[in-house]
Structure formats: structure tokens, C-alpha cells
Amino acid sequence: MDTITLVFIALALAMDAFAVSMAVGTTSFLIVPRARFRIWFHFGWFQGIMPVIGWFIGRQFAGYIEPIDHWLAFGLLAVIGSKMIHEAVKDLPEEYRFNPSKGWNLIMLSIATSIDALAVGLSLAMLRVEIWRPALMIGVITAILSLVGLYLGRLLGQRFGQIIEILGGLLLYAIGMKILISHLS
Image 1 (cartoon, rainbow, N blue to C red):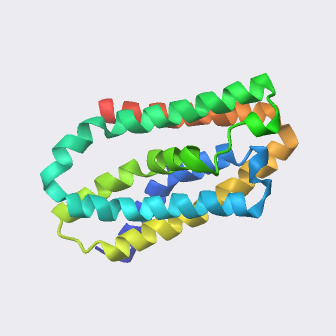
Image 2: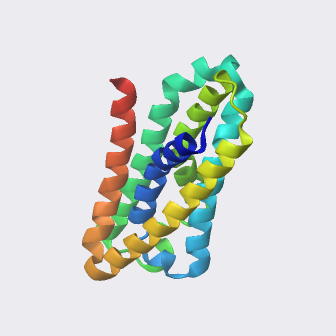
């Protein structure tokens, strides 16, 4: 597979992570550089490793994963989006607010934004394409776009505060719905 095709695949796969990064970039937890690092690193890592997992699973299990992958992504994004909206409206103290850069929140976001990369890995296995170069390109491009998304979200969050946090939660819902609708149609 040629490099230009791989770059376009990586860019397409990175769009969900970019949008989610913008949404979570509005939260006050991501002021700290270490928290931003955790987001872009995990998004890039998961997006890069999922095609490898898909590659090794191959055709054997593709039929089992494909029917539910969109529901899983939608569910994870809906839960995270609900948390963001609830906390923006409720004005909870900092220690009780949703932190997208730690624990299960980070894992759920990373999985939700990279499930489609698993399917790409399955497809590449069926096309007999070597997986390591595409996986590396997908991971690096996703990490870079996630970092850009975090900074854009932070910039918007500083200017518009609570409204942007609510819009970020709604954006996560919208991404989940887009994934769901594109697989159901």
C-alpha cells in the first residue's frame, strides 16, 4: 500500500480522536502539560495498536466484532458526553468533576476513538498488507492531531467556558451518533 493512501487512512481514522480532543480540551484538568500528554499519547497509542490487534485477529473473528463495534463506540462516547454536560451544568467542585486524562475515563475515550482502527487492521489483514508501517503512521498522525485538538479546545474553553464544555459533551454525543448511524445505514 502506498504512503499517500496510508496517510489518508490515518487522517480519516484520526478525525474522531481530533474532535474528542477538542471537546475534552475544554476541561480545566488539561491545563497541566502532563494531563495533555496522557491524552494525546493514549489516543495515538490506542489508534496505532488497534490495527495491529485487528491484524492478528484477522478474518476469524471479524464477523463477531463488526456487528457491535458501533454500539460500543456510541455507548462509551454517550457516557463521557453525559458526564461532561452534567458537570458543566451542575458546577461541581474540582475534585468531583470528570477528568478525561486519568483512569477509566481515559481508557474509554481511547477505545471509543480507536474502534474503527481495529476494523482497518482486519481489512489490511484480508488485503495481505504488512501491518507495522500503517500502524505506526496511524498512531503518530492521531497523536499529532490529538495534541492540536487539545490546544484548540483549550483556547475555546478559555474564551467561552461553560458553554464550550456543554458543546464538548454534545460533540461527543454527535460523534457517537455519527458512528452509530454510519454503521446502521
